[in-house]
Image (cartoon, rainbow, N blue to C red; front, side):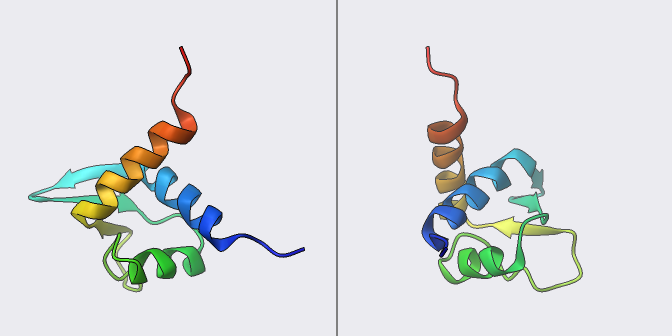
Length: 79
């Protein structure tokens, strides 16, 4: 059975929102997701290159907004 990488990337980006934190002028998220998905998010322009020794990755403005939107869409309680 194949996997829908688009859906996987959407979930990874939504879950990155859970671990975001301010670091000076930028927002970062802890790297705890699969490398293949992180690489695709980097190529899509949502995060900086995850292949370094840092434990976190810088979110782009677009990536932060998209991760917040996806998190709210998939995990917000319905009233």
